[in-house]
Length: 286
Image (cartoon, rainbow, N blue to C red; front, top):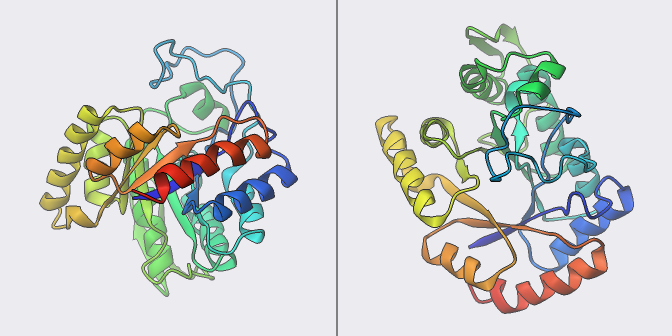
């Protein structure tokens, strides 16, 4: 099983350059395969949307500084050599897919092919409205945006025609260093997310789900992959959890590809102590 690491939003100075560099270097030193920042462009002072991963319906880090994940990853990339650069989760329907394809390809070239794009639809209607995009059709737009970006990455002269994005006879250079393009992992907790991962994803990140629910969603993903003529075994499964040996063992036994560990330490020294123990006792054995 691979291991990733999420920064400690709300308790650590995630937005600072010194912290970001140290976080990436420490993750690499301890044997983590990847880092996974989150995204929220803005957080409304008041909102009625329900955060789906807490009983309160409120996002626990709504007061935290959340830097742009791609800018943050570019900074981390400059201070590391092998660490994969993931997003958990970038809100794809809030982005222009043509501009985003260029940004991601540039980052993939600068980092020597280390980018992994974790995407989701977003749950916060008020944020989408502030960004100026439609919320209710975000699923259809996400499907098109994935296809459009892949066309830009793979076709020397790219063409794509959809309901929400269209272009023809365009060149998007540089293209990603990864020959098959940047892998896209679909995040979410719904049946639609599982089906989207099976149809379009290189990976699936079933957010906020216990092992029983993960198993159910995984079966839906596999069914959708087979219906689309794809190999479900080639689709990675990444799950978020705490640095807990029991949770890591359960994920490993369930055949999870990657455990993305949430860091809650307020500084790098504290993180080093906790994550070194986790690395020594868990990561080196599973």
